[in-house]
Image (cartoon, rainbow, N blue to C red; front, side):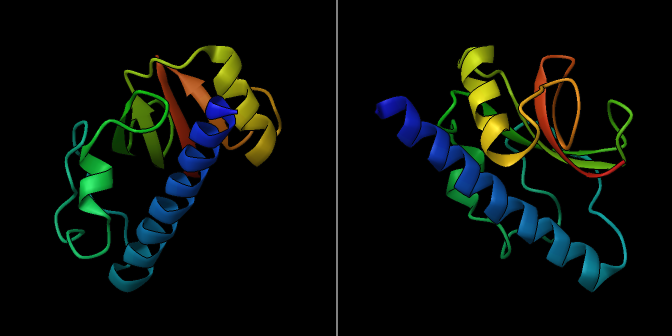
Length: 118
């Protein structure tokens, strides 16, 4: 039961962050620049729930905005995850295709990413 609640929290946070980055891109005509783990991208301080973005997330990782990394143009990622691949696959089943190697939610180079633009 606790794992299900953590998974749902992760999915909800991911959706909120994805919407924030989509809104940024609509308003600015481009994605924000790449930043490091738990760093809020420039001009995103009002759009993101900063305390949630900067803290360890419900799967034990840190949020990260990836632009131009791992072959993707833009992605909301989590790094340093302590959850198992099985738990992350359960999340993938709820939001994508259930395969961490394909679809919009993927595991690449140790990070789990929701791909916003390929």
